[in-house]
Every structure is written in C-alpha cells, then in structure tokens.
Length: 473
Image (cartoon, rainbow, N blue to C red; front, side, top):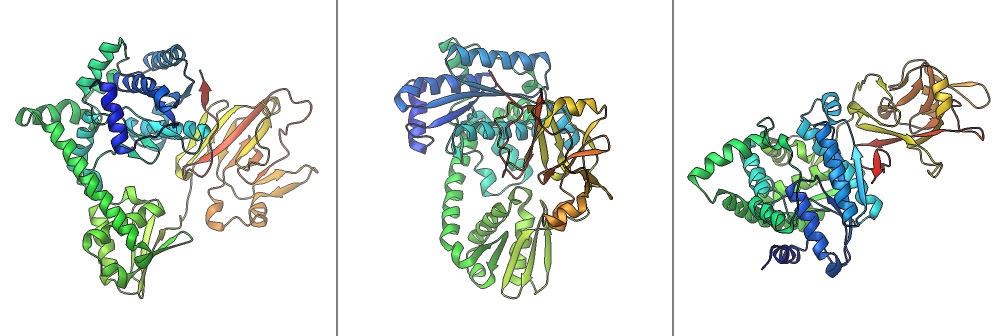
C-alpha cells in the first residue's frame, strides 16, 4: 500500500477526521509538515476536506525564518490553498516570560493555530506533522522527567482538535515520500543544535540507545500505544463514577471522601487528574502532588489545607475535600511600552495585547476591544504604555469631568481580587482605556478621524477570541 493509503487507513482506524472536515494544516516548510500538507491534499476530494495552511514566523532565525514564511506562502498559492501567517518576536517574549525559546515558540504557535481554527468554525481541526520519531522522543523525555500513565502514552493520534495523521510514520519514510513527490522542504538548522532538551535527546541520547536496541523507536511507540489504551480506560472509568465521587460547583470540585476512598488507587488518581484538569492546573502537578492529594482525601483532618503548584489548593471539610484555584494575593507588575501595530505581552497577569489598524468592522460592544484615533494618540507626543492601576488614577469623561479608576471598578462591581489585573492603557499621564471596563474621553474616534487603531486584549485562559497579529497571504 502506498504511503498515502497507509495514512488514510490510520485516519480511519483512529477516527482522526471525518468526511467534510475543516482542517488547519500547521506548516513550517520542513519535511514533516510539507509531506502532511501534500498527503491531505491527495485526500481532499475523496474526503471533502476544507484545508487552510497556517505558518508561524517566530523571528528566531532572522532571514531564514522570513524565507521559510515566503516558501510556505508560495507553496499554498501553488496548491490553491488559503494561507494564514503570524509573526511574533519570540526571543523577546521568552525573555519577558522567563521561559525557554522552545517553550515560548510552542505556546505562541499553538495559540495562533487555535485562533486560526476558530475562525474557520468551532469544529475545525489542527493537523500537525508529528511522526514516530517525535513520539519516541516525547515518551523518552517523559520517562527521564518521571511520569505517570498519561506521560507514557505520549502523543495521541487525536487530542481534542489536534490531529496527527503521520504519527505512525518514521522520519525516513517521510523523507522518501518528499523525494518521490518532488517536494523540496526547508531545513531548520536549530533542530540540529544540542541546546534544547528535546534536541539533546534526538541528537545524543537516542542514537546511543539505538546501538543497544536498534528497534528502540518502535518499542517506545508500542509502549505509548499500550499506555494510551490504559489511560483511556481509566478516563472512562473515572467518568462512570464521577457523579458519585465528585461534583463541579462554580469553580470548585467537591470530592466526597467516602465514595472517593472506596475506589481502587488507580481510579482515585484518575479522579484527581480530572479534577485538576477541570480547574486548570493539572499540567503543574506531578507524582508526589497526587500522592499528597490522595493522602489528604483519605486521611486528612478537617481544616487541613494543601497548596498545589499552578495556583491550586485543597482543603478538608469533614466528609468532603474541596479543590479550587487559590486567590491571587499581592499581584504586582511593571509598566510596559504599548506596541503600535504589534504585540505587547504582560506575563504576570496572563495578558496579550494585539494592536492593528482598524477598518471599523469590529464589534463596538466588545469589552476586550478599544478603537482609538491614531493621529490623536500620536499628537500627544508621549509614550504609550500599559500598566497596573496606581493610587489616585483618574480618567477624562465626555462631559469634561474626571472619574477615579477605583470608584469605576467599585461601581462596575469588579471583585477586589481582580482589580490588580485590570490593565490601564495610557499615553503619558493620560489614561485612554481602563482595559475591559471603560474608554476614557481621550483619542475617541470621530467623523474627522482619518486613521484608526484597534487594541484587543486576549487572556491566557482562552475565554476571549483573538483577532490581531495575523496576516493573510
């Protein structure tokens, strides 16, 4: 069977997508993503697929990164496919966020892909070119870090809206396919630098282990497949007893200790993973955290609390244990220059601000969006900034008066614990937007406005829809 037929069989077996699916194809221009795009194109007519190419230009490799973007756009145009391109200064973002370039690029790339998919429709899928070699690297990396059943399962053929149709193919098979189809993929030289952990595993550790076990990649992939089946069984089993052992109550998970303690330890851990995932801090928890949570649920005394990484906490209350996100205390963050026609990131509060030219088609009632007169802002000859609220802050009203920001937040019933997260957008000492709450009478759009600029806030919790930072090519 030809490779394209094997991929189609893999798609059917794992229910990766269905006829009529809309798919955003993540394409870096490298061998894996180019082969993915080519294979999906070969299946497009038979499966009635709607495809869009998406490329994230991260600014890490300078001219080479820009050349990759041009290459992907040219490929999409040649194949008659729409193409979305996003550009961001990832080195600067990584420095601000105090994370690795690898982590920063992955975070922002997936944020862009998710937004692109949302624009195509709620059920749109995101296809990536991960293959068996990537799977082997992932499983081995998880083993080295210390992992549970979900980590051993590695990547799944489908996880939510993320699909991986090439997950069973080797790197060599993909390279051969590119040669047969006359594809000339780009090469990212950073993949061959032993700087990131994954690169060191790929370039140093795996080659050494293959000398002892040439079939190591296959063995790791079989391990992942077996553990994925076991993890799936546990998730289903946890769902079957969830209503007896737990309840989701307005941002809190209540675990009923008697029902919880009656289950097998593996099922108890599955219940805890589901609770942590629901509350949004599962990825921060490791083996010892689940051990401590299980101990608390079974033997903890009333009033005992447990602080968890990722902003979680648990508390014993007689016959129940309450899991929740801890209230943020004493949040502080520093002033940032506000980029015009670009991206501003405030890591401390999990906010990204996108600024782009406005054509007037935006929803004027969207509280996350502010439209301003660009000429009016620039005429004030002061630095544009976004900052936290300061004592005595006030803003100009349309009637010529002023209002204190503090009184505005109280009037709008903004909870005290959230007020420190409200961003203040200012030009010099003059506030022009209390982010998400109210526009000030500064640089308002009028009939005389010639140039408009839109500022859109996007919070990391994913509840808002992003629009800025994207170009269509």
